[in-house]
Length: 265
Length: 287
Image (cartoon, rainbow over all chains, first blue to last red; front, side, top):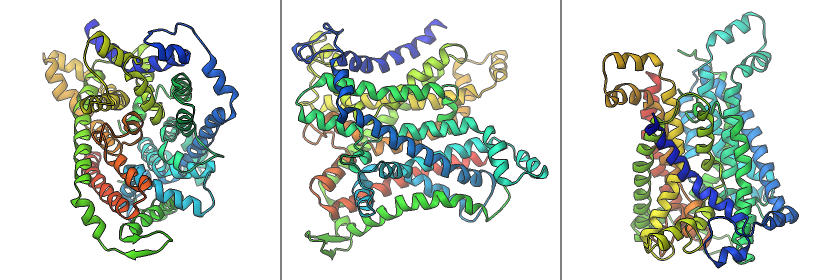
C-alpha cells in the first residue's frame, strides 16, 4: 500500500514545484532575483503585492477578468440548460448533426477566430467591452456546457418528468422546482467548467479589448515589456491569478472527477 | 428510446442563435479572405483557390504541420499512459481523495499565459529552480533560448505538467464507478493485477479514455498561448507550432488571404481527426 501511494505523491510534488517557485519568486526583491539563486526568499517582501493592489491598471485587470468570466458563465449555463434538456429527452430532426456541429466549435483553434472576431465585434460596437469577451467565450463554453448537462440529465429517469405532468405541473414549474434541484451537481460542474475555460483563455480576451475591459493577462504582458525585467511583480501577478481557480475548485471537489467525465460515468 | 418531438427545436434555439452568431459570421469572414487578394484600401480581388495551393505547397506550412503532429503525438504518448498509472495508484476513499483531486486540478485553472511565464521563471538558467539545478548542480548544459532540443523538452514537460491531470481525473472517474464486487470476484478467481487491469479496469475506462484522448488531441493541436509565452516559437522556428505560425501570418504580417486559407486547412484537419474520435465515442454510448 505504501509503495502505491508513492506515485501520486511524486506526481503532486512535480505539479507543485513550478507553482512553489512562482510563489517564492513573488516574495523576493528584484535585486535578490537578479543576484543569483536562492531556494527561499532571503529578504521577504510584500512590495510586489502592494504595487498590484495600489495600482488601478493592475487591480482593474483582475476585476475586468472576473466580470467577463461571470457574465460568460451565467449566459452559457442559462442557454445550455434547455438545449441539454432537449438533447437528453427527445429525438428531433438533425439532432445528432446539431450536437456534433456544436462540438466542432470546441475544436476550432482560437487563433483562427482572433482576427474575424476583432472585426465582428468592432463592427457591432462591442469592441473593448466585457460583453464582447463574454460572448466570444460562449463559442467554446456553450457546447461544453450542453455536453456536460446532457450527460447529467440523461442519468435522471424520464418517469420523473411524466409523474410531474400527471400531477399537473406546467413545464416551466416542473423544470425549475423539480428538475433543476435534481441536476444541481451537473449545473455546478458546468458552471465550474465555463468559469475555468473563460478564466484561462487569453488570446481572444486580449484581442477583443484595449483599455476599458483589459484582462489581467494583457496587463501582465504589457507591464512586463514596458517596465523592464520585473520578475517579482510578474510572479506576484501570476500567483494572484491562481487564487480564484483554487476557490471555485474547492466548491466542486466532490463532483470534479465525474464532471471531467462530462457526467458520462 | 427517446420519443420524437420536433418542438424540442425551440429549446435549442437560444444556443443555436448564440453559437451561430459567434461561429458562422467569423467563419464566413475567413472563407471570404481565403479566396481573395487585397492590396489595402478595402479593395479585394478574386483569387480562387490559389492561397490554398500556395499554403499546402509551402515548406513553412509543412514544417509547422510536421512539428504540430510530432508535438501532439508525443503529448498523447506521454500523458495518456502516465495519467492511467497515476489514476490507478490513487486512493479510492478517505480524507486524501479530495485533497489529491484539488491539487491535481490546480494547474488546469491557471491562465495559459501565466503557465508560460511560470515555466519561463522556473527554467531560467542561474535564476530558475530547474535551470539552476540542471546547469549548476547536475552540470547539464541547458538553455531553452539557445538549444532547440531543450526548448522542445521544456514545452513538452510544461504540457505534461499542465494537462496530464485531465487524463488522471477522467480515468479516476471511470475507476470509482467499478463496484467492489468485481474486485472480490477477481480475487476469488485468483486474477493477477494485470488481468484485473486488462479485463475489469480498462473496459470500464474505455469511454472516459476516449473523451480524454479527444480533448487532449483537440487542445494540444490548437495550443498557442503557453509555448508562445515560453519560447515565442524559438529558438529559430524550432517550436513554432501551427497556431503560432498562423498568428504570425495573420496578425504579424497581416497576410489575410494566406492566413485565412491556412485557418481553414487547419480547422479541417482538427475536425477530421476529432470526427473519427467522436464516432468511436458515440458508438459506445449507443450500446
